[in-house]
Image (cartoon, rainbow, N blue to C red; front, side, top):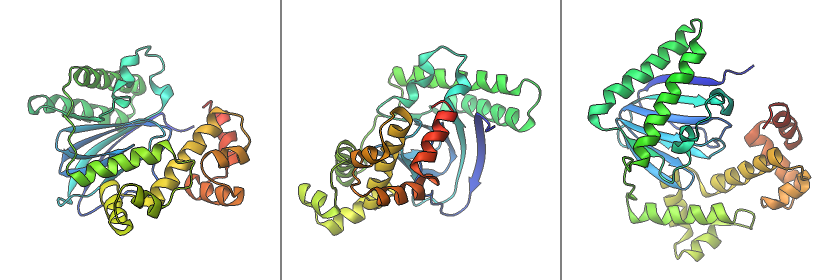
Length: 273
């Protein structure tokens, strides 16, 4: 049985590239202790700095990237839906539902966040009797604290870094809304009055994905949702996410999910998704 909650503390020296296809069935909290990173979530790219918290919803495509400062230190928390099930408090999940997923912790409150996160890390590492209950309580405390500040408008006021970032965000949002259609770099570039070469370079720089990687990822993510939430035939699901050729869909799905669509659906049923 998989652990329902993981917390990792890591220091990285030099540049680091996250795997190109990254979405999972767990909620994720990313806290940057030192350094600077970029973080692409859904359709926005954030520049995160020391003391920033980032929230990623389950099954949501995301990717971290380098800036000119390669060294960084972070704490990462992943947890399942069921880990906090005995708390009937919707506020716990609000940070994952916000349009802006970034909370910049004020300097005078960073010490409290640091202490709480390292207490959670010690609980997880020591695994003493009752540690899971302690972690549930600590995680709930953190999430309610974050949700209250985000609701008060204490989150970062989001501004695109440049006109290029704003344009790519518009293009990504458009792709998210029409991924079932035939999509090509040339066609999207023409629609947005950009050269294909310039769009390709900008897209990779801003999101961390190539254009093809992104379109593929968002299609397979939607296919996984349909496999979990409907009883549609796989051929219909393939068509609904933009694949006319079922064999091609199967190959791409397996490359990303490491299993075929039928086995993915069976596993989701077993796990209660």
